[in-house]
Each structure stands twice: as C-alpha cells, then as structure tokens.
Length: 345
Ligand code: NAI
Image (tube, rainbow, N blue to C red):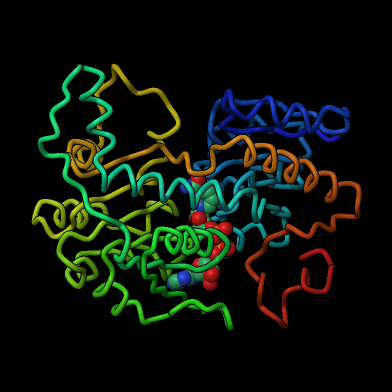
C-alpha cells in the first residue's frame, strides 16, 4: 500500500482521486491545509506527498520531507514553480501532470476575454435586478483584431486556434519558437506594440517574472486587453493597476494573481481582504478576476487524478522510473537522464 499525504485537498479533488486510487494500492490522507514548513510533519508515515499550485515546496520543506522518509513529490498540476527542484535533486523525486486539458485553460482564457469585451459580467448583474439598460455596455468585435500570444506550448497553441476561429490576427512570442508551426512569431516588443489583446501562456521562471511591468505596459496600445491564465508572477500587479488608472490598459482578465497563495480557492466572503492591491483591482469595472479556475473542468480533473495516480504507481512499482519526472536538469540534453528513460538520480 502506497500512502500519500494529499495537501490542500478541496471538495472537488476527492471524487476523482478516490476513483482512481480505489484499487487500494494507493491510499490518500486528505489534508485541507497547504504544505509548508509547519505542516510537513503531517506527512509522517507517508511514502509520497501530493501537492497543488499554492503548496510551498521550498528547500526547508524538502529537507523535512526527506527526513520523514518521503520518497516522492507528486504535483497534481503542470506548473511547478512552487517546487525547488534543484533542492529536491538527489533527495526526493518530483513528478507532475504535464498535460491534462490544455483546452480547459485556453477556453477559460477566451471565456474571460469575451466576458470582458462584451461586458457580460455587468449585463448578468443588471438583468438579475431587472435593469435592462444598455448604457455603458458597448463592447468591440474581436474579428479583425490582433491577439498577441506569449508562450506557444500546449495551451498557447489552442488559444491561437480559438482566436483564429474568431477571425483574429495572431502574433506570438516564444523563447523557443516552434518550427513549421505556421505561427507568426515576432519579438516581444513588437507583440506588445501591435496587439489589441495580449494573452500569457508561458511558465513563470526567473526570466518571465514581471514580464508585464510598467515598461512593457508603456509599449502597449492604448486600450489593450491583458489576459493572464498562466501564473500571477508574470505580471507586476502594481504596474497593471497604474496602467488601468492611466486608461492605458483597457481591461484585464486575471485567473491568477502573484499573491494568490493565501487567498484563492477559499471562501473569504464576510472577511476583510488584507490585500489592498487585489481589492483595488477587483473594484475596477474593467477587471475580471477568477480564482485560478482555468483547469476546473470535469475532463481535466479526471485526467489530473488518473495521471497523478499513475505517476505514483509508476514511481513505486517501476523501480522509480516515471516519464513525468522533473528535475532541474530536465531538457539539458547532456545531463537529462529522463531523455534516456532513466531515473533522474
Ligand atoms: P507548455 O510547457 O506546453 O508551454 C509553455 C511555452 O512557454 C513553451 O512553448 C515554452 O517554450 C514557452 N516559454 C518558456 N519560457 C519562455 C519565455 N521566457 N518567454 C516566452 N515563452 C516561453 O505549457 P502549457 O501546458 O501550455 O502551460 C502554460 C502555463 O499555463 C503553465 O506554465 C502554467 O503556469 C499555466 N497553467 C495554468 C492553469 C490554470 O488553471 N490557470 C492550468 C495549467 C497551466
């Protein structure tokens, strides 16, 4: 029996994970708390921990888990910026779910964009109060506008297809452009200057932190719509707020926020929100915030649970070899052992 401490468990997680773990070879200990230095101890007696995007798997946490005998960190997400993979190397193996439904996130990005440009969020509230006035609801056509897509991986490419379906022109920026993809790659500065809509689909790394800052916003078109379904840290939220106040940014659609870890995924209604920046952004009529729900479709939840349980089984039943293992050497042709179908260490 493989015992797994399942941190930051939510009501929507349990049905799918219980279903895929039901053959009783994997037993989950569902914990509502997030993983951090204070809660690592709760994994005592477990072979693995299963973590999500706002669990803080830093060097100290890894060291504590290692001392407890935990062998595997199984991320139930694609992004892994919250795990210090360098610190984990040589101690605990890390696996993730590289793709579960890129459609879920790309479709959510377009849902946010359409809601924003057609003022659906405002119309919904009005008609519920039998206010049928159209005043202030004028939007604009997406057809013929230019979408700038930053990051053309699994999600970015689907978002590009969706935009093309709407008759939009698409330009893209990626540090590693895909060859023969038919995508019109341009330098980032050009993308910022030309785009009516900018949608972020690259990972959060040292290079991409605050990719959208005051300088970048300064280069954008007046009235630009910024969509971020990737990671909050890609945007300097203070600079975004200034851009909105200056009327430079026409609208922002945010599924992620840099300081979301202690706020998102919880019911905070009835409480006073300490984060003034988020409160101010939410108070803006042209800002839509969703609480990191891009992934939240039935298809994605099932795929996440199935892949995570298979990752765990593969690691413990297959001599530690798992295709979805991650380490700081990943992709480094000479040093990456995974490329050679071996364990990372
Ligand atoms: P992916 O790995 O398939 O694609 C990422 C792309 O970004 C790649 O083409 C890569 O070359 C590019 N990239 C890397 N560094 C870059 C840089 N410095 N500048 C520009 N481009 C760069 O990832 P995928 O599956 O498309 O996911 C994208 C992001 O979406 C994830 O990193 C994650 O943060 C976020 N995400 C958000 C979810 C949500 O619920 N809101 C759910 C799943 C993922």
